[in-house]
Length: 351
Image: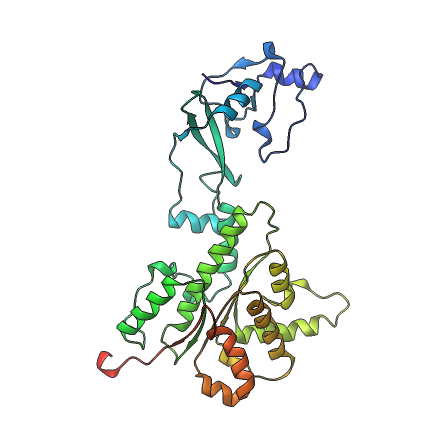
């Protein structure tokens, strides 16, 4: 037996006329299931299932029902947790369709049955479609040729790369075991460095968005950043010019800035910075100092730093200077939970 009741047309009119009162109640996420009604003759009993928001009826709970919920300690889930296919996740994330689970409300109810009291209730859960939208909004900024790549756990060696299958397997094994660590990937082109950097970025982005979903007080601040070094320097130059104007265009702000990183750190998030083709940076002027500042902020907050380069450390030292190159590159690949990975050319015998 349940104590759940339905608001009828008559009771709705009684609300408007003041003949039925809804006492103050602690604020909850779902207004449609938090009211208590005391004028019982004007409320009819409702058998299970109770009406849901999509039925166009408001649902209210009596004091008896609320007390029974407090006494119940053994809840059994009566419905399977709904899931989306990969195609549906992408369509929802890109805004092409409404979420089939929550119809765009960002939460849904799952029926639970109380073993001790025999009552039923809907347990509201976060749908996660908002996280999907955030993920695909950020993922769209990555190179188009990599956007079809799957999660890191699903990656396998590619025969087309200039790297032996055995070496690829060893690298993938290490990355899959510790996707949250920092990495500096060094080696010639066409060995899979950018592809793996994007796979690590995807993992970090998922972790960040999952944390924000469970964080009740999150402000939606971005904490994981991907940028191509060449694009970042161009963005910084354009933004420096824009700031000289009386009304700068906020749309021209770089993808990542020291201010954005500091904001995420202040909110308590672990920041991730993923720099593609860091060897394209010329170690001169304020452009490089801005990158060093961001790297230091992430490093000092124990965040994740990942970068790749077609040039080796010795070659970068010749262009940047031994001290400057050593200081910057150590942030990525030397220290606790930080590794340097060498991407060696595929042997001719395996070509």
